[in-house]
Amino acid sequence: MPASVIVGLQWGDEGKGKTTDFLAEQVSTVVRYQGGDNAGHTIVIGDDTFKLHLVPSGVLYGHITPIIGPGVVVNPATLIREFDGLISRGIDISKVRVSHAAHLILPYHVALDKARESALAGDKVGTTQRGIGPAYEDRAARLGLRVEDLLDPASTAARLARAIPEKRALLAALGATDYADAVDADAIAALIATWGERLRPHIADTNDLVQRAYTRKEHLLFEGAQGAMLDLDHGSYPFVTSSHPIAGGATTGGGIAPLQIDEVMGVMKAYATRVGSGPFVTELTDAIGERIAVTGHEVGTTTGRRRRVGWNDAVPLRYAVELNGVSSIMLNKLDVLSGIPEILLCVAYEIDGKRVERWPASAAELARAKPIYETFPGWEQEITSVRAMADLPENARRYVTALEEIAGAPIVLLSVGPERTQTIERAWRPLRHAKR
Image 1: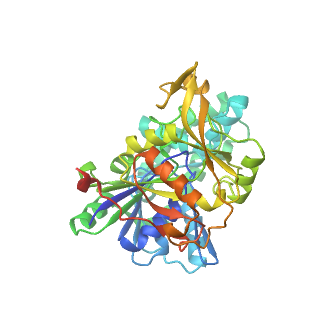
Image 2: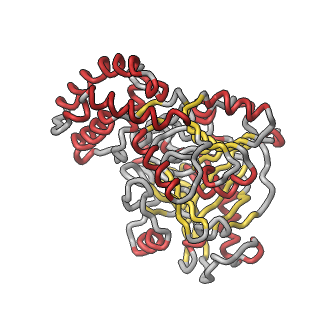
Image 3: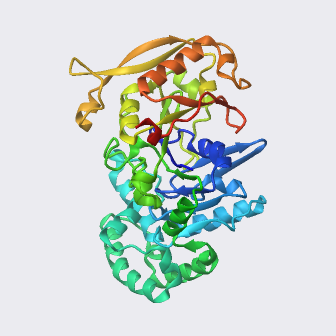
């Protein structure tokens, strides 16, 4: 059975949670491989809506082992709150496993994140202020505490003694106030001890779990957070996240080897959205943009911030498909475009008077980009009850075909509503190994 990676092809919020949930019946293990509680997956099952931030979407299936891999940064308070919320709704969380090697988000990380964004004023990056970036910084600087430290008071004390003086100095330099609790070593150590006792049954060597499942020929699914265009190295820097949402991140953050991955499914919306700061060439600030935002309920699951809305953009889409080695695509929220007379699709940019079809090499070049659009006739029909491609309006099918041709990968799943059942299965999913 294959190992599959689910990756966002835009700036996050593409509907990866629904994709993972839809495919989950076929798999034994779902692994979250990067990010932290800055992510948010919304899953609708009948009248129930689940909003998950750290726990993999597969937790809603009893047969699945949900894994939080070593590439994730974990705020134990958030994870425990999420556990409690799931338990209160009758969801069994006993199979959830957290990598001993995942790094912790501690109070001083959150304080630093907030202080930095405040100091940037009008030049904010647009972080979620959940401490994600500072936690990844400590990981790289070898100052971080890991999940395994939740069970080792001596290690906790030594690592806090090394980290806290620097954090105190940084917060003071940033002009932060009321941060004493965030750098109180005794208080943090007490929190860590409490967290450790609660999470002890869930802490494991998840790389070993992944490899043993692979050896048993079970189907593994790796889900990323955010999207390819927010990747630290490959996204629209500096308006990016602090980890690697691209498919390659599954190997460093999930415990799977590159040659063990058989399938990369990219996820995208029928239009584009972005949360926070950063370039957005096709952004809509008119009545059409407002209509899409309202109809699509474009509010961040984690932050509650209104998402910026724009037409779909083939330039970063082609780039993301190539970068991730995408073998198939799930297209979400096609139903949101119903009733719009004309749908625009950006097929290239104009930069300094020249047509450009590649993703710009620099942020300065991207800032000068203007969209070149092709126009497609819209459709009036409401499509949320459609379950076969042939039953979609002709103009909707034409738009889907155009997206598929531009992306260079087959669109095999089509979502026409938030529920699991509101999905059109268009074709078999090709595997990467089969393509070669």
